Picture 1 (spheres, rainbow, N blue to C red):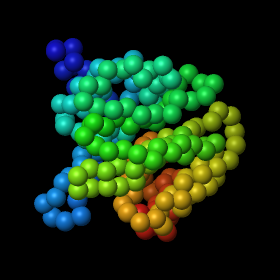
Picture 2: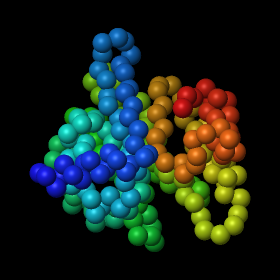
Picture 3: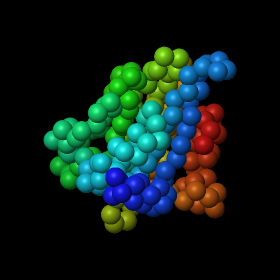
Picture 4: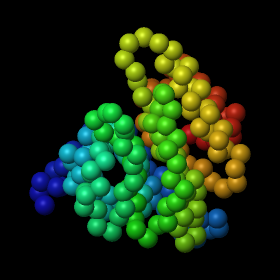
Length: 200
């Protein structure tokens, strides 16, 4: 237990991409879904840490990036939870994954990956809450090239696919960019979100 506690403190200290969300029901006092997004590289080697962190903090769903999970990693023990991900073809492992409680209904699993990003979307439904959940990770290619333009186009297409549909939309992940408005990429992202009436 001491090893687990030390690992959890390390996770909280070093995981600068951690974010917490609460998805509320349609009326006051209704069900709330606790959503956590974490970036913890090579999660397949630290699964016990992530799983205990999820249980100890009573998260309903955890969006994970840089997992490096492989196709044979579905044997990972996650009692009381389910794990979904899309293994990368021809690479050492997958990037995005979703861990969620068995009491939550998750359906419509769609691989949304594009040349500049890895992503998948799911439909999440609890007793009184439902939303489309997109998990995404921006791929930074080696060498020179129009990285920002490619990502902006791919991400805009992904948002456009769902933003006009009925229901709530939640997007989480790691876009590998600075969070200040001085960054051109961040300004482009802000403009995109504002043009589609999404909030960051």
